[in-house]
Amino acid sequence: MTPLFKKLNLGAQRQLTVLNAPASFEPELAALVAQDPTLLLQREAHGPAPLHFALAFAITQAELDAACRALLPLAEGDALIWIAYPKQSSKRLRGEFHRDSDWTLLRAAGFDTVRQVAIDEDWSALRFRRQEYIG
Image (cartoon, rainbow, N blue to C red):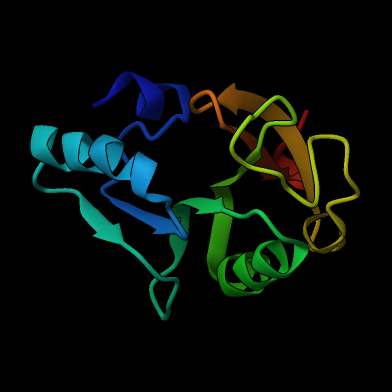
């Protein structure tokens, strides 16, 4: 497992969903799969299988909303939901939201932020967890 995915708590998950990954993130995914070819990497969210680990990249509010609408209905139990967004310090990317934004769809679905991880110089990710599992 790569150091980044250790920070993202991939753990023993055998299936992960990654949405809208930028080209700069592809080497990370390739390294992860090369280290463990048994991993099932999905590039879109679809049922009926439940979702336990997801990482969605979003720059615009529309991308964030679309990712939430795709992922949240499939999230099961204490699913690991990570949303990656451009850092405010990024010189290449400008996002429409940041760590302290409202995160309306996630909060309305009962999720709250529990952790932040730096992905690289341009991206950070927030982990969202169902409120019933926070404590």
